[in-house]
Image 1 (cartoon, one colour):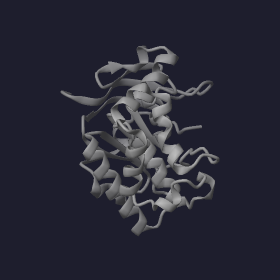
Image 2: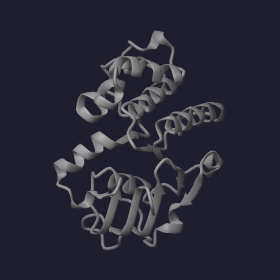
Image 3: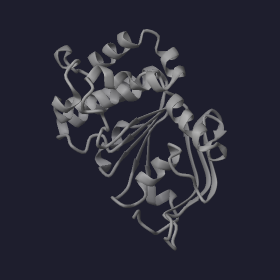
Length: 231
């Protein structure tokens, strides 16, 4: 696929001591700037796939090309560096550092990645702009993350993923704790920020009702030939 952000070919992955493969994906391609909704049941392999895309795990077979380079050929350290420089993650449990303020949590990627810091420009100014666009009131910016509501933590996690304009954004069940009106608001804001950054977005959820907001919908069971579930 020309100008692909993500291109998976002939991927096979099985967990240690498991006889059957968890993922067997002949191909998955996501274009640069494309916003894709991936859905499937719990235990169906979604989290495993995200771990592979993030370089946390490596497949038994196949290639995972991100921005034109095969990350399966990189060392552990190089994959960590690539992830820090080029991928913004929004985790289902947010993974904020509870003792840091909302603002300092957003700035973390600029601490770990010189590239994202350079692309950010004035980091604190950019962080406050993102928090403002994501509708987090200034009164909350300096509160420890542990004192924020679930919805506020979610917006901080989104701002952290977006800062430094990473080319790939991955969101893992980010709206599972929200009611329908708040889901709508969050998705609209996330899509707008991703579009402004020109980032490819892979949004993963078990709730297929959210798919209408995205350029394309993919059911994991349609691209995964393996029948085993995640451990």
